[in-house]
Length: 312
Picture 1 (cartoon, rainbow, N blue to C red):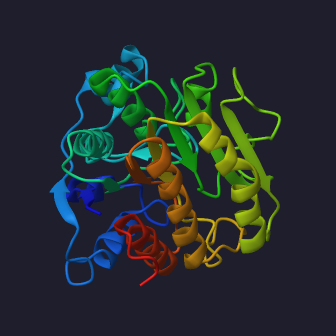
Picture 2 (cartoon, rainbow, N blue to C red):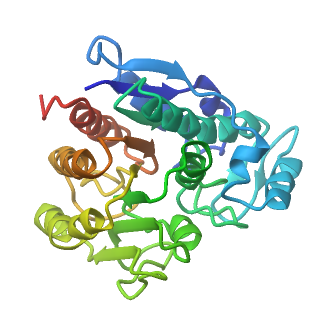
Picture 3 (cartoon, rainbow, N blue to C red):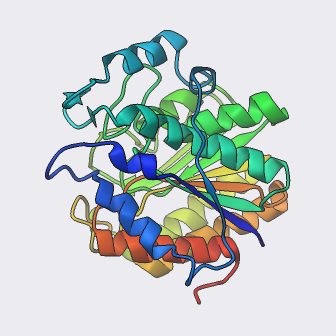
């Protein structure tokens, strides 16, 4: 099993300001945890810059232009109450989107079996015309549309185990029966979407809300009993994971009380379905995770599972 790690130092220069949870130290922590001594077999490449055309597959072109036009040359600008941009955001958001495009290329061209994109800012809250929730553009949606445009992929699935519901991805997928979005997330919690009744145009949206303090058993039952069977029935030709680690028991922003073992387990379950449906083609993209120690250990469990190392 060949796993590719795609990241870039430019993502550190997305400056959200002091005390902001989505801070550069998050990426530093993940990069340190996935060091070459502990992960010697990872194929490592720098994330390229996504161009406007790539981003505009998921967002209207005039919106893409408008976002880049307001990113300041100095200081910081709030795009909404939570989402901040700075001069370094221009290249950071292009690298974040570009990492997923490069990962799609790698798995479809046989350069890797799967890939993990360790980038920031995250993306799953970004709606077609609205940055929000720390997210500027929707990285996984950009990757899904690249797979369709470049490789003629018909059915693409995104599975999101971030503790927050990916309202942006759902908004982009719900009216297309060949796009599947499945999410487990704490409820009630920001952004207030993700009820089980939100099912999409062809039952292609599967939301499994979990109560605070749900814990490992409830998470695994939500996956095994509802989300994973729906994913298998959809039979995607390509699978993208929105890998948020803020459901961890040490994370300060929510209270699902998940463990490193849960993240390893769900990754292996998703890889099994991918092996049966789409020749194992999986791209995973970092979303949330705000306790640095938990982010490191959960990322390690996730990438070990992608490599087939099974909890070593």
